Image (cartoon, rainbow, N blue to C red; front, side):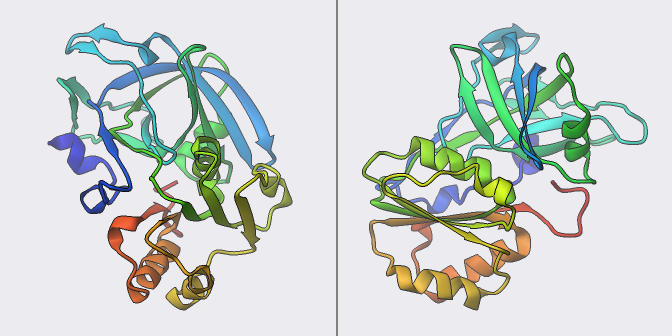
Length: 282
């Protein structure tokens, strides 16, 4: 109960069309991991590799916990951080299949998309956009090999939809998820992606491929009309799936565009990845 209240809703799970998408849900496990490697894959994007025995099944005071599982392109894990002032780390308590969240003090966490998990090597990769504020960004800028961090989740995976075409919208924070879409898609799926970034270094991270069309825009649209201008020429059909992840105002504008175009909600999944002006959110 406490866990579900505190986890930011990123999936419209109750609206997903079971004929097009499948949701896999998992027990929630708190895991203590170690930083294995730190690599700058672009001047403002850092890959941090995590590992440790708790990525596999392990036993703690709450019983046997299952191995880490991430099956969808837009999965989310929570990363826990100490308080910036007191440096005290507050963690939820593991219960059977869920976490019980403390209230005073509360646990401090941020959500990130797993970029790659390799069970054979026991390595989980996360990617962080580096900036000059935010507790997660500061951690990513300062962490080093051997540091330890706690994560939880994913609580669910939305598997690749059974769609002929996926229309993707995202800013720089969505690049790891878009990269997952490109890697996980069946060869027959056509992807048309609109990525909001004017940074040529970021643009080198995603590659054109067969049935993949990447469109780079200098900035994210912030009105429904601007998104409608992008969506209308696509002539969406019942075989299309629309996905978006970006700053809150742009995500709201995209939702308004979807509603104005009368697109069925079961063929859309739109998330707020961050909020402009709120340092507390990454």
